[in-house]
Image (cartoon, rainbow, N blue to C red; front, side):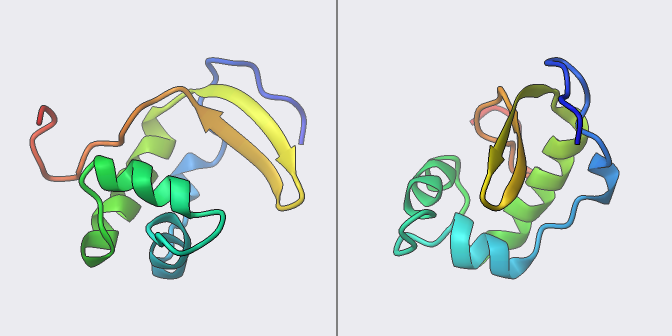
Length: 96
């Protein structure tokens, strides 16, 4: 994958897949060694395992609307980071 310039839209964002396993088992798992900090962050945004589908929807929407801030390479592949805070709860008021 070639480097993406900052400010560019995320490629293929409309095809993003966010599974229950990834959300509940990793992103919202307080016991996962790598997911624990992510769980704390998303929990502070109002996301919890019982409403995992709301986080999945917010992440899919975020992929479409956010812009690239940084591209990283890890043992898992290419990571595309955006410079955004908490994704809004889909269907919830945007100011809390």
